[in-house]
Length: 272
Ligand code: OOG
Ligand code: NI
Image (cartoon, rainbow, N blue to C red; front, side, top):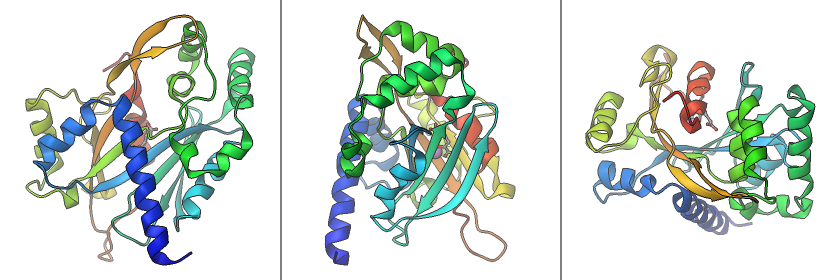
């Protein structure tokens, strides 16, 4: 495929992904208005969630990005949350990095495992080959009761049951945001405009010493139609990242597990 054709495809993909994301994250376009003042926002990364079961394992979803020219460049483990993750980068600096995590399903109760296996069984494996799969949402419908059962064991599992495959968050690159030098200034502006930030582990996670500082809003809350009833639950959020140069002068492109661990909590219903 020619470079030109590929970049057209990639841009089309991110446009569709963004449209799907803002359909469940009404605060996201407002973030752009407040921080960008009409100018284009460059995103540092986009994050996805999945289960470690075929046909939707992390590495399988990653193939969609590999076909766009992305390559893997970091592995992360989250023992307490029973997750693992990898990040992918592209040589085109205008393309966001991709962070994909997956739930280690076998570490949960029989009951949760069964509910998750049922969900994954409703996916047509051919759909996973398509780029559109990454904004295809749920391929099942669970009851609010099942959502609550999963919530007891894993906020991540419950979130997946309600939202499925989509961008969990986009992330403003503060390095490339005109008018802002410090992440703290971004946070102050957002709070002044009424956005609620994730305070787990402090408003700013990380530091220049680990070459990455991150903050995020708490997820919006939207009405989700479960099979039995509708409920108002946390959907998706926006993240903000400032990167620092390594001693060799190259910009750090990785993630920081201790910080990521807290960013996951931006979709928590409690503990804001
Ligand atoms: C991912 C949380 C981690 C980061 O940038 O460290 C993360 C998630 O909530 O799915 O996005
Ligand atoms: Ni992130």
